[in-house]
Amino acid sequence: MTQRLHHIGYIVASVEESLPRFLASAGAVQVSEIFEDPLQKARVVFLAPPDSSGVLLELVAPTEPASPVSAAAARGGGLHHLCYEVGDLDAHLAAMRSRKAVLIRPAKPAVAFGGRRIAWMITPEKLVLEFLEAPPHNSASSV
Amino acid sequence: MTQRLHHIGYIVASVEESLPRFLASAGAVQVSEIFEDPLQKARVVFLAPPDSSGVLLELVAPTEPASPVSAAAARGGGLHHLCYEVGDLDAHLAAMRSRKAVLIRPAKPAVAFGGRRIAWMITPEKLVLEFLEAPPHNSASSV
Image (tube, rainbow over the protein chains, first blue to last red):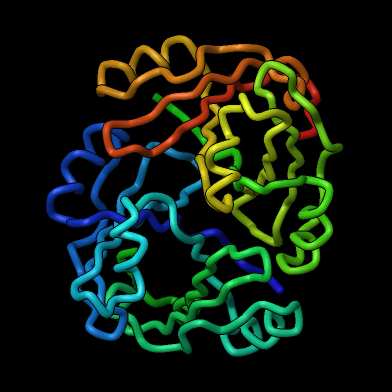
């Protein structure tokens, strides 16, 4: 099972309001447009902090009360999930299920990743994990 | 300002109880002993998930009600802070202050890092950051 920490998700009330403040306080660079994903009911943007590990920070805001992140945003937001990029998404989800992690949102194409699929799981210790399928070889991906 | 994401801090009620469960569900390897830091009023242990970025996961539990992480543990714990290793800790803290981050715990030697100093800041967006001074050149460090 190989994986790479791709980004850390941070919940905010408004991506547009928080983005300039995060860029300033973290010394980060914006590395994507602001995406709205109707399947995830969220708006997201990716920042690159000055960090030689290459791990991105993702700001996530709900777009409607039924968004999976609305409750966390209402509690004030903050650190929310870790996203790992994996080579074989379906095999990875199966392996995580065998470790008692629970699928909370099945694999769906994500606009923020050029249609690459993401899925969500939660471990018995309540760690929320996003898994992102790795891009096909030789493909370009902005984030 | 160079930095490297060293670990992600996750608050638990008991390091001893959570450690085996995290190892199992994350497929992680324990890479340190369990340290008790009287200055931080916390017990901590480091895990390495299968992750080519090399970022560690730290489990943190309070050792007393006055611990800085007691309130977070009482709320159920979870993702808590990002720790960046930096080349010049004092210069880094000064740079972060100029970006309106607030020092919440000043630099102190940490037993979990062989006496290397750590300091804590919070950004205006409430992101809790730990800064760890990089080891001297050619020194060995377990985590």
